[in-house]
Length: 262
Image (cartoon, rainbow, N blue to C red; front, top):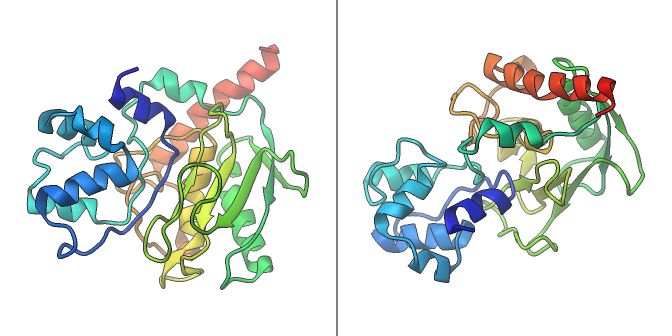
């Protein structure tokens, strides 16, 4: 399997990370470290030409043309999600879904600076955001067999995608039918909040749950599935037209197949 395709297939969704200051990694050294740290091994990186690496990055940032341009390195340093920005085919997107409309979720543990009751309330609101525009039904359970498993971890945590402490990787989620369907991880070392300080758990969780439901990234900056993290007021938050259209397309087909017994 070609390197680029293999990475696109097996990469967990949503590795949001503010990258280190420019003074720490300059020019091409920074770009190589970016690819090695989040996408490719050093051996795989050596196989790619500069042109091929640019093409690979354009799966994530369609406007990328010059990896060494100041505006490009500035873009790479933004907090954003590391999964492919919808570069895969629509057929692939349709396959990555739950083939049922009733989903259970379990919160395994909690962040250090937030009460469990607050986290439960946030996640309930998050699943309601998605259920309000679909026929999906979510139920919180304590069972280890829950469809969606939400947890907070430090460093290496058993999935080959270790967290890196405060200010680094925010979290990741795995698509349905990926072998780790419904697994949603957040970095326990981050400052999670209900406001605009640190990272707002409500906003990041909507994005991550979107991936766990099978949604890919959107190129629409107003979409919660846009790759870059952007704060917006949770009290007035609404899914974009783009988000609603894609989740309804995903699960209207799912319900049709369920009724037919496929």
